[in-house]
Image (cartoon, rainbow, N blue to C red):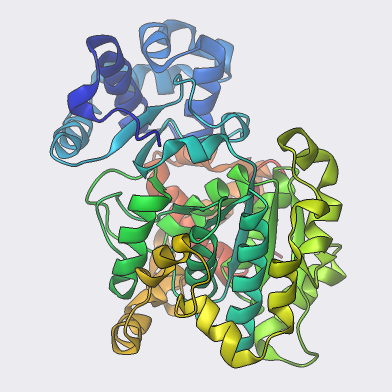
Length: 435
């Protein structure tokens, strides 16, 4: 198991690169896409900071370079620097050989990742399973079965550590060889939702937790759509299990398409409100999935270099789907372990009361329409929409620079406006004003 290097274990060169990475992250007017351009153009955060006079080569403006020169980023960068010194987490920089190659290829790749657990999982073939927090028993059974089967073949299951579908996918995968990666919408040291504390502990011990947010970052609504690009970016494909028509899982599916990842959906029963989003995905071209073999067959070419195929799925695993519902639920909760590693799933089991207490607070993961209104204040909303109407489709970084707004605030506004149907996200992460 490889746990990576914490701040205390980093050498001088690595700490210099880390500080430069923070400079990029905290510089006003630089978003994930601008930072990724700089990293690809100059090869490292340190080289990018030292070459700010040449930022035009990366497609950035003189205004952005001038903002870096002011040093206005130092206060908040120092806060993040100090916050990481006291936590037990590895820091994975964009320049690190262990930084996952699929993620590095994204146009908005994170500058760095904070990690707790086995970072060697970032080099394994991965598959994302996402879905509703308010899932049905049938949906949880399907998600657990898919995660268990794929993980038993050596595929690492990626999800978002939420209640419902995410949680059972993590639990089921941890009991098998592929294990699981959880992508957080909070700081790496923040347990959210609280009802998943046992899952967090098991993931740190046997899987991997990652976050691009600074330690201590709270579960703000705008964080979760942003982190979804990492869930899909790490994976060969994304399976959506139960999603309503306005589910956050659909954002993950859309991002997967932008990243040239495969998108799958479990269609579910006709007229079931829990499955309307999945059925829409199938109408739009997502592949319907009814078994783990469907995924293994479809991804055969990409899995072959890892020695994974349909033949990797044992008859024992396939037979689980024929058991009755009670047995399926026992498997999901880790109560019917059949091998020594199944005890990992037991550590994930939570009391129902804790889950219920957290269910209301977890609404923050995807903004409601009221929350969307709050993310996009009316006075700033008008300026943003006028800008898009006048200039045409623009990326978040360019919008923030044009309107002299922090990129983080711009991203939050765009999430809110997208939920309200007032802007549309286009390929290439560009946005246009709605009709």
